[in-house]
Image: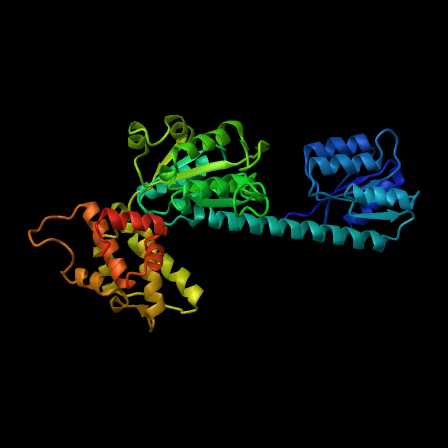
Length: 454
């Protein structure tokens, strides 16, 4: 049963106060408290929250305007209706500027008071519903968006819930496709910054000159092509969260600038000397060993320790394989709704094929497979025939394992997977990069590293 709205009547005339309280209590719809002075009203408002305050304007020492100001300061969501026998345009305007819901002149009609109280409480109710909806959305996009029953995933969910309300920087470590951006968004939506922007940026996708401009902004004429002043991503995310993916690819010169943002909380646009204050939380991610990069002199140790206040190590999908059915059905529901194709489930044969697959692309690869199957599939269930040929063959006993029975290394599996994706996309680098969940620059690096140019 919903709690009754809480009303506070502030009136220094005992008869008027008693009459108004009686009017509002009749019918039993409201919980009404009364105060004989502005001072008493403020004491009550400091101890408890009221949905609506009805206050007389002219009272000794602390008048209705002061009550209005203090009530709004204590709880901006509380609505206030002003009551006075000395109505004037100036006082009405002043009350509205201070946030009053309505202004009623005495002597007032009972029905007018009841109607304005009902309108004010309807506004309060709608505001609460909106707040509840926002919390539900934040919960869905926060820790509620992380799917997995494996103990390591559950431990990560608990850590995210514990760390998110703080303002410390977080480092996410894991292979490509393990869900680092998902965890970054969960941290943001479960934090005090959830109402502000979440900005994601891939540090490996830009050359250094563009990297500086994108992150810190530039002034008009700062370089060729700078036709207008542009705010950087740190400015755009002021009050929110900045997610820096592939932080290990950030050049050393840029690392110095990022360190200044963290230490001094200011940025300077390209072509300017003005320090602009910014308040952001930084969540960084990498699939590299930053400690090794520090030892090799490719990553600053002071920046590493600034970013690595809390480190979350995300497991590869092969390390929590028992989550594959749960994740597969989650992605089935997601993409079925998006494509308006109501599948009832996944066939045993297809699930068996998924469980035998190694998933070098991790959770992102699993989602891509389910999305592909939903796109191509027909009937009530997704079938094994909706999977790529190589995955079905591997499930049937074939695959990429060498004839001598040797298990492939992770690097060998990554090379084979990239080669397979390139083949399936007709060597379309843009599409292949999308499927792999990396940018074109990173894909070109891997192609060169694995000698896949041909």
